[in-house]
Length: 248
Image 1 (cartoon, one colour):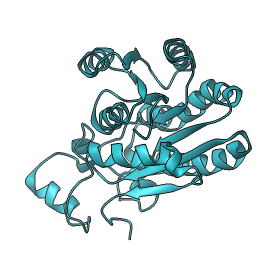
Image 2 (cartoon, one colour):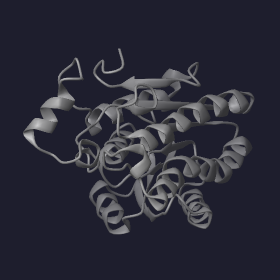
Image 3 (cartoon, one colour):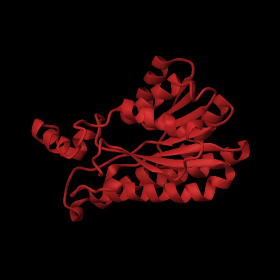
């Protein structure tokens, strides 16, 4: 029960890595707001997991929606101790000059601007309550980029730099900020990253992961629990790979 009594928001929490983090947080004693653009999926997961989970339909790319999410979670739990910025989108592999402008704008709104918006809403509450933990879900693409995913890679590199800058600024307020860099995983985004899900593309991706498998939601839940718990009280500004050795 490493998160006993903690109150958390997990964006993109209704599926994939986010759902894995939500499930582990609840198992470790936290109460969790499942924030997701897919409100029905968030509600279904919350109903499955019981009274310590609530669903909040949220578009993390829009400030009004993020403010409403924060207010709902704060009202339900009486405070916010943990924020996980997990919501994210990618794009199909393609030449960097071919990505449409509207797709670029959406990627940076969801993967980058959202971190600013959630910080603007949640950090003042954490400062007022004496501290907290923020975890940004970045990517190995921000450290060791794959070709033809340039703008996705860049958005995750932005997130890693933001994590470090936030950690330095917020440390005096006892707010720790870390990131996780997963490799491609068994999530709804996997087919997008690979440009289609076939045995051949899976084999190609797996060949770049020394441990020989994709990241799982359970892997992310375990790593997120550690970094957001008091066991990691001396750890801030870290972007930790959960990648089976891909970035070595």
